[in-house]
Length: 261
Image (cartoon, rainbow, N blue to C red):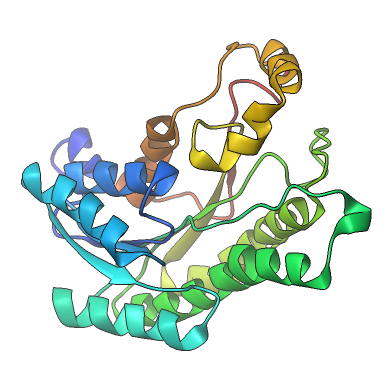
């Protein structure tokens, strides 16, 4: 029984898997969840980079391990889940589907391989991870799945140029989140979507090269600045906690007011 409201935000002893965790927003999600007491699996395609995040967490007294995983491959996803269960006693309470790629390219220059790579990671990977982790959550009484989407997901009034596969994948994540919220609620598994605006991560380096274009976007934002990874991590921490226990199927825009402008 929760005695104080602040206890709802604590993640003590909960096990969290974060994909795409070696840098950028993923790294910030790991640090935030660990700060609140979660035991964190730092997962990405480069284990050496993941180990650096693990070391950051351990230096602050947290508990974390690194697991290399290409989320577009079902067998690697299952291996990640199995290793997590082995390391932390069988349960997974939180999944943050954060891994993602973007390919800024003119539509007529896109190859089939460009489309497939983005879809396999951004959409298929989320499906594979959620399916594998939800099976564990179902056996253990529930959990929270947090999908990282984007305001560039279609039907929100923001056209995002030269990013057709990326925008298509993010729109797919939004639809998948809504559908899974209905399917998984009976197992007390919640699934929600965070839609960030433009956040200061390595992914937006190509956007920064167009200084005038970036300046134009920032001018449209009521807050007049780019977002920081930790500002997304705060929402991740909320959705991972019992403070959001009545939320599922929701989309939370964290975009500096972009959609409101």
